[in-house]
Length: 200
Image (cartoon, rainbow, N blue to C red; front, side):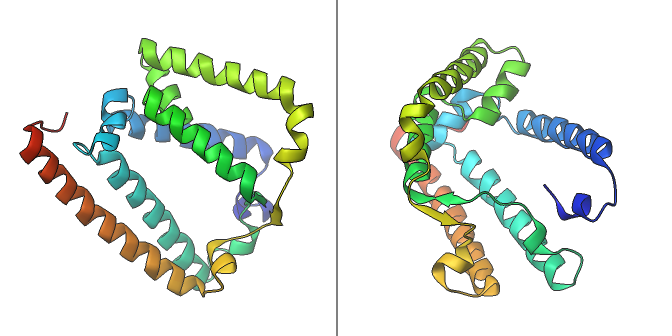
């Protein structure tokens, strides 16, 4: 998945150990951030706790800046970083389905695992439902295959799609993040004035 593995800096066994360590660390960070609680996650949709937007946008910007500058100084070959091919319509539909499930259940797939691991019954049910959905999709795949593989665009990044330089896209995303942070703070204050409800 990462170019350091492709450069043979370490083997498959080591890469699996590193993946487990990263996964445990990521899950721990999510739990400590409150992302194993459906109420906190769903609160963003009601604008009284925008923690999820702030944390995830911060993570996106941090990773993006790291990739950009590591590539610029020659520590990383961005072309070797694995990205999946784009199938624009099926992926938009999939994103909408995931978003609806997020609003209804209060979890995304990753946070449901964190919640289940900490013993929350709603997280366990959501996690079980996710596997049931995967099973149903697998059984229905022969009927969905044509749609699943429709509108292929190959490996596409935002700079490719927009026809802009990587540096400009980085600047625009950072500006978008700063605007989103300011809007989130404003939205929380307005929500508090209207309802008197504080963050959980």
